[in-house]
Length: 500
Ligand code: NAD
Image 1 (cartoon, rainbow, N blue to C red):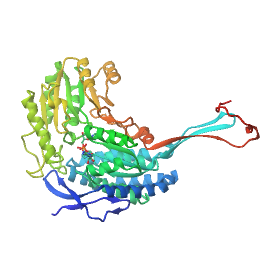
Image 2: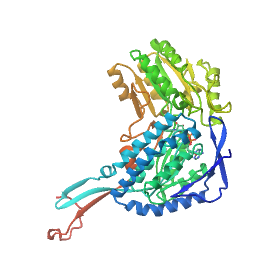
Image 3: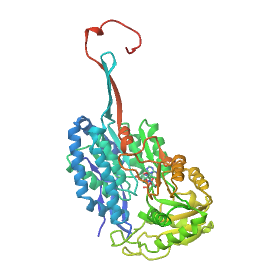
Image 4: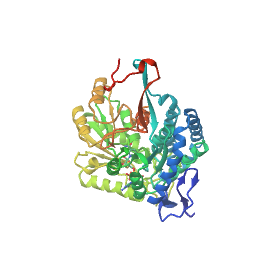
């Protein structure tokens, strides 16, 4: 089958131009090229931004009632069409079908949060801040906002931002990952069906050229970025230098600390689920297991036993637990880390470079679950974000040693502790220097009405995604002071206004 052309969605229409540059999209389970993606030039991005700015003027003035109706219609359509979107995700990303459905469901929760926009957008009001003078605040849209998303959640990450941005009256230009671009096109088309006016939601596909065009265009007022730490830092620095608001979520190295009093079966289940789910290509994946010495052997045995029951294969296959990695280059990079771990002296308990997978072909980008024991903090498998199905066990002597390692780590996205000691868990939540914390929970991803984001090198900027932080990111606050004519207001007074 010849590759399908995948192109930009400008408002309600597919782009009808001819791209100067394209890139290939693969089916990771077979290694086949299934799509040819048009990459946007700077000129095209600027054109789309100008169109979005025009559309935003009207959308920003649309009543809350109208915006709410569009959001409810979009929520309904997204729920009805999730099968089709999930299949597209599996075909381009490789994750299993249930996992793809799961990411859409988490995105739906943000849409549901945004459906309450009337309640959320209420400002404050004080009567009589001074005699017969009232004051209130209102939240107004920024204008055109840019979103740049990573490959690992082709639906959920865009849905962290777009519903909140649109609900608050902005127009969006999104640049999805060039590795799995089609899910965003399907979702953008649902906004059209939901009644969103033409030009409010736009998709430009591309690479660095399109990202730089968004970062440089003065009409784009904010950038919401999710991806690896070096690019997050670049986007933050370039975007803020150009006068924009930027929230740039970066990479991760998430630890799970298992204390001797933990339920080890629960902890082993969680380590396997959070370590190998989505082939470790989750920003909240657990990649380091800190096991207190006294229980480390037993815990590793339980993890080994469970890992042996996992099936790796084509994401649509029945009973498949884990799919392939996203590209051959990424699979080779992860393999390189396994080689390095061995060379640096860690004990390879399970070697994912060997073994069979089901479905797909021999050219698929597969790697099986891998487990290292005896990992030391100076090894590259500990210091670097691997973003693959590689779990590293670091043995620690105590709670304090584990906590120290976590707090010394330059990343601070997610972390979790397994224990039955409430006092230890409470001390952990208080002292740990990480943005999202789990207690006996494998992946502590906050609900839509909280905000999602890490600390340290896992987030540049000061605003996390969705929840009230998302609402504030996409709005400007205006404070109004009002007085209505009254005879008592006359008279000259050049002094600074004071209240009485
Ligand atoms: P990536 O940084 O390679 O790409 C992210 C986006 O940036 C893509 O749209 C890509 O086209 C663009 N990009 C890539 N190189 C660029 C460059 N030189 N200049 C400008 N733009 C560029 O990330 P990825 O591989 O797609 O995603 C995986 C990474 O994302 C991991 O590090 C993961 O931890 C991180 N991530 C973080 C979170 C979070 O919430 N903190 C969530 C999901 C993923």
